Image (cartoon, rainbow, N blue to C red; front, side, top):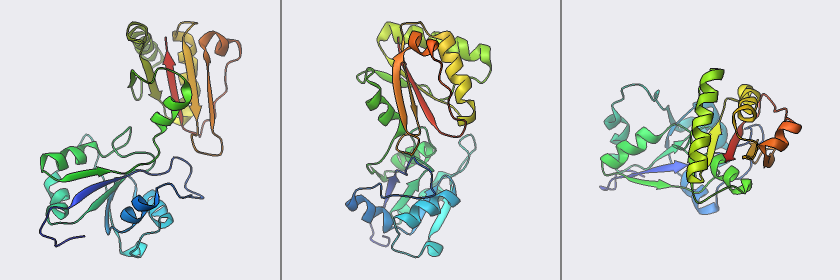
Amino acid sequence: MSGSGQPGRLLLIPAPLEQASEPRPWLCEPDRVLAASLGRYYVETPKTARIWLKALPTVQPLQSLQLRALPPADGLTDWAEWLAPMAQGETVGLLSDAGCPGVADPGAQLVAAAHAAGIEVRPLIGPSSLLLALMASGLNGQRFSFQGYLPVDRVERRQALESLARRSTADRETVMLIETPYRNQAMVDSLLDALPAGARLCIAVDLTGPGESVRCKPVAAWRRAPPALPRKLPAVFLFLC
């Protein structure tokens, strides 16, 4: 998709949320065909990207594809170099390891640079753990915020949760959090310690995966039977005070 004389596009390609050992179809057919037709992809991790691209499968042989890992978010990057193929008419895919690029995943800076350069950005429909968790929680889907990762320090994490609980109470806002899987249990313990007894807490684990579990109940009920979370499965935490 190059040499047309018109600017190319940046195609945002969602990736499955489950483990990559047995990839299943995850894009609707028109989007799959479009994503599979490209020759260049900017990716979070090339090794993981190859698994998903093989599963599409791509039109070009996997070994001939051009895969480039996204730079660290805190580094200085010459995005003009990255955008050059699109400026010359090529459509490039942006693929993160899991879920939607730019949403709790790398890619937002590249997308922003594409907008600034007047390059069309097209998002494809695909899985987002945050929206899936919100859908399944029964909490307020009209007003919500994603807070990402909280401080690792126990005292600082409690202070952050207390502040978010006050905000949730004042605005009737659902608060969404994530954590590195091996710290899931620490997050649950902090949530049960810091949130009011009447707050509703949802814990969504391994969404779309074989270990999927979505449970939502008052903090008081969680305290009577505290959950034990797996250390290797991703989770989304949601609460409404």
